[in-house]
Image (cartoon, rainbow, N blue to C red; front, side):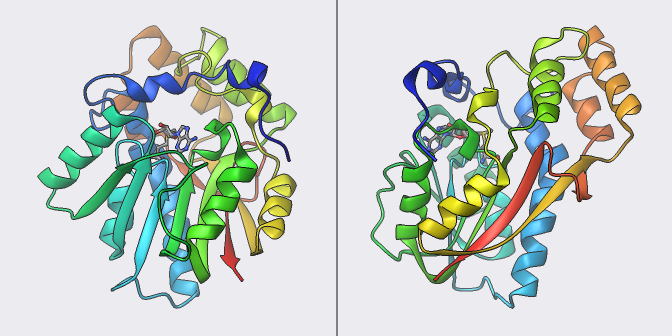
Length: 266
Ligand SMILES: C[S@@+](CC[C@H](N)C(=O)[O-])C[C@H]1O[C@@H](n2cnc3c(N)ncnc32)[C@H](O)[C@@H]1O
């Protein structure tokens, strides 16, 4: 895999995360869906792997790369890890820090990009990078940096969007472009930046990881029902909070859109 070409990378709107104020924790904001609709799946998955591997989080460190407003970071901290989050968007870091303080959670937040992690080699016992890899310009550099800062035997958890015909139809056309259902701003995601499971697997293996598995996701409701929910949201009958109360992801074999996985540093 190569770095994303400038003419493609220039299409993604990563400036959304630099919006002033709290865009993460208000249930009526789109990014809060990461908590209501994505966390149940990805936190459930990583917790089950941590259990399966016999990891006791007590006294262990975890880094979240691309931590945004702290929606996943706080769950990592609640698992019991000494937790650090890093993100390029200062406004999101401020929101994350304020929210952690208000919740009595001791999380260290830093500003930086996944391509240049400001940490020494072998600093962390675990690294999480969820819903971020499809936003970065230099994926090979991010994976090599994650490998560098992980201790040998450390676990890397990730989830990202697959580059398939179905993900173009769903994640680009339905979620972003077709007004009848769209609930995301245009260019929040750029299909060409999505990552096929075999591409990330190969990249991990090239960067000193033992790749372990991938696992898929599906909505908790049927596709016609899901489209009905999105239609209600688009017509203004439902808020994002209503959407979050009715839709969330569940574990499935379907890797066409969002999939998760883990790898262990050798
Ligand atoms: C969809 S949000 C995910 C936030 C968080 N991981 C979560 O799931 O709750 C994507 C995040 O990736 C961050 N991001 C974008 N480019 C990045 C890069 N090169 N390195 C690290 N983070 C990046 C954005 O600032 C944003 O906070």
